[in-house]
Length: 74
Image 1 (cartoon, rainbow, N blue to C red):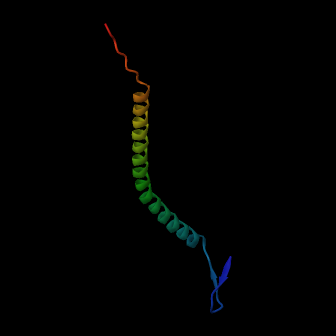
Image 2 (image 1 turned 180 degrees about the vertical axis):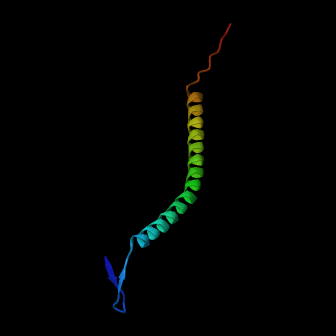
Image 3 (image 1 turned 90 degrees about the horizontal axis):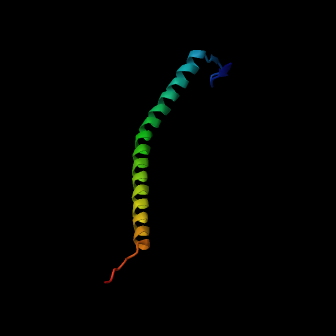
């Protein structure tokens, strides 16, 4: 594997060059992923809390509609 530069000389790409470049790319991606992971977890927690609150309120409303009032007369 050789590459030619603008001046016309051959430059060899070594295994170490590739490994170092891939390692730097991987480190960069993992850093970005860990930064976004915390914000995604916070957003998921808020979303789940909202879903639980909506389910509670809808269940409460349904219970009020179905509740019957019984009057006892003597």
